[in-house]
Length: 277
Image (cartoon, rainbow, N blue to C red; front, side, top):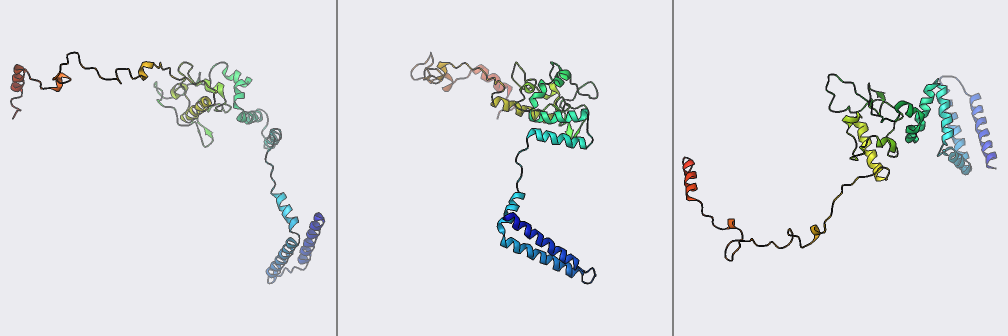
């Protein structure tokens, strides 16, 4: 019933518009007045229909607001590949873009792929890296960032040069390459060549991975002795008297009156005679 009423209203509006357009005068003097009159009459018809059948228009408006909350990965991959092909991107470029979109969601899969094994083998990603510089002394700091305004600079750092390498706290195999197995500390950027921006992300990812238990945390070993926390220790107990203590004398010898040596006092006075008043 609601669909029939809706269709009837649409037909009436169309007939009203056709009738107004057929009687429209193209004279410049009266064209604006007739146009305003036709628009006003159309608005009045729509308002009257909305007041008579409000439920129909409310359902139509709610249906227009419906959005798809989630798109399946397979459907998203299909439409993305179709858009890339329509833009003229095909062949190895299309494969690299699709691989990058796949590794964004699961970056740890790249370190297990054949592409990574062919490029790096069993070495770390920063093992063969060397930054070009002038002179024989390398710079004491790495560059601030390798990518500015979506443009990669020349000779980028080991992480920025490979778009498939993504720092993530779940990418444990990548994080272990930047952590010393002996000290458990993150290698300095001057050793690995990583830019300072990626070094900050790397330190944060290592801390997050340790907080989630993905990387081992090395705590310093402390030997707790029971004597250090007892009242019988000499540092917290009663101070014993000195061995040569006698009643009536000060606790320590320097607390009492000390008689200086007459010869030593005369020698010092002779040296500083000009300065004494």
